[in-house]
Structure formats: C-alpha cells, structure tokens
Image (cartoon, rainbow, N blue to C red):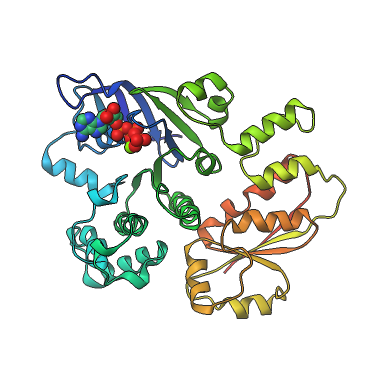
Length: 383
Ligand SMILES: Nc1ncnc2c1ncn2[C@@H]1O[C@H](COP(=O)(O)OP(=O)(O)OP(=O)(O)O)[C@@H](O)[C@H]1O
Ligand SMILES: [Mg+2]
C-alpha cells in the first residue's frame, strides 16, 4: 500500500506582498519509496517549493502535510522533522559554514548528539561517497564550486535522513560526479530512503525517476509518469524543458516503424537492444557479484574464474572495496548498463555490486528479456 510522506495541499506562497504568487495553488504528493523528480524552467518555483516542503517557509494559504499531519511550525516539531527530512540546497554557499571540510560534514551528526566514533564513521563514508576524502582538512573557502557542492552533499548524506530533498544536485558537477550522484540517489532509494530531486537535466533524471512533477510559473502542471509528460510536445515546450534523448530516439524510431513505441526504453542500452532486436542471437550471462566494503575483489574474481570478463562497478560498498584492492575495472560508471551491453554482444560480463543494489543492477537485462529483445541470463553471486 502506498504511504504518502509529504503532501502540498493547495499551497500558495509569495516572497512579498507586492509580488505575485511564486507558488500558485500547488498540490502534489510524494509517496514513500517513489523516486520523484521535480522539473521546471528557471524561476518555475522548484526551490521555493522545496523550502515550503521543508518548513523553511510557511505557506500563505494551503498546507503541507508530513506523514498525513499538517506541519506545525513550532521549533521543536520542525527540528524533529528536519532530523528525518534533509535538504540539499541548490547553492552550496548557502550550506557551508564551518572552516574546514570534515568539520562541516560533521556538523549535522554532531547536532544529533551521536557518539564520537559514529560521527567519524559517517564523515568518512560521506566524504568517500562524494570523492572528497583527500580534502578533509581543506578550508572550505578554497574549494571550487563543484567541490563545495560535493561537500554539502556529504553533509546531508552523513545525516542518514529518511527523506532527502535534493535541489539541482548535479548542476555544476563534472560528468563523472554527476553520474555518481545519480548512483548515490539510487542507492539511497534501495536503502529505503525517499529521494526527491529537482533538475533541468531530463536525461539524467529519466533513467532514474518513477514519477515527475512539472512546475511552470509557480503551478504544478503535471504529476505522473515521465512518458506521459514527454508525449505532450506542447506541454514540454511550454514548461521550458526538452524531452530526454532516449525518449526522443524511441519516438523517432517508432514513427518510422523500426521499433514499437512500447515499452519505453529509459537508457541507451535499452534503446540499442530495441533496435538490435537480436532474436535467436547469442547472449552472454550477466554475473552480479555482491561485494562488501572489505571484500577482496581480486581474490573473488579469480576464485570464480571471472578474470577475463568485462567488469563494471555499482554501489558504495563495491566502490570502497575497489578503492582498497585497486582491482581492474572496465566500467567505473554505468557499470550495469555497460555490462548488459556486453551480454547483448554475446559476451559474459561481471558487475561488482553493493548487495542492496542487485535488483537495480538487473533492470536493463530484465527490460531486454521481458520485451523479447534478448535472452540474457542473470546470475547473482551472494556474499
Ligand atoms: N528570496 C527571494 N526573494 C524574492 N523572490 C524570490 C526569492 N527567491 C526566489 N524568488 C523568485 O521566486 C520565483 C521562483 O524562484 P525559485 O528559485 O523557486 O525557482 P526555481 O524553479 O528553483 O529556478 P531555478 O531553476 O533557476 O533554480 C522566481 O521568480 C524568483 O525570482
Ligand atoms: Mg532552484
């Protein structure tokens, strides 16, 4: 049964009496475990909506509900809610206020009054997750914009929130880190965290989001599946957005009769599989090996006779183990996608995978098998 975590009910908000509504009768629901993206052009009201959902701003009319209860704006209640719902602000300079990196990341866990060792572990893990372990003693003010953004992300990860609101988490990051942020978002969801993300990058969010809400001039003009929205070209144009390339390729290819329109591919691998439609061909096996942070990857790969396979990495514990073992990896990014593509080409491949992400790593292979575009065997090797 779906459980609604956050809900905006006919919310209006304006910054001053003179200005018009920046949020104009917005109603939307965020359900537990549903990967939710908030899309919209510059100035559409995404950041304002997030501040209202996080009780930073109080609506002028309408209400925000958390777990079905209207928000109380009493300090104690707000603090309790914020210990469960973390927000990553769009601008890192709004979030960094301690002199060096590790102090800044430790700030939230310290406020939760956690034991010293627990704080240390959370800071270590969070800095590793965002690739900033080598900068732990660096002064925050000497970091680049993208590095600051990584540190603020580490700060919210260290809070271990139940709900994470991320405002433009990939903007200003290099492409590899942007990919890693999406992998982190996926991992959080696999761990039961409800993640809500705003973005202009419809390509990155398309392969991730279950549900989107589209903001336009302060109104929520669409709530539903991504495909339902992108199918309406005029609505996409009016919202100031562009449809993702996987969606557009599928539309183009189906209009000239190369593929059927359904099912909608969300990734390049899925588009490729639909085009190849390799019925009766030879397909490789996708081996997915669970990896703990202290696993000896080199020994495991050798023991299973996987030394010659193309190998991809997926998830935090596998990245930790790879960092220690310095094992050879062919695909540091998009591991499951690239390995699935190898299987399409008739070769076996190996995903070194965080145990919580095994189901997620299977997704493209399942899309291919369920659509009848191939027959990829999936072999999970448990810890
Ligand atoms: N502190 C503020 N004071 C007054 N007006 C503001 C303030 N912050 C935002 N606004 C206005 O509210 C509207 C919505 O802004 P908001 O930042 O919510 O948009 P957004 O969708 O997050 O945009 P972007 O994609 O650029 O991040 C804009 O017209 C903006 O000018
Ligand atoms: Mg914004």
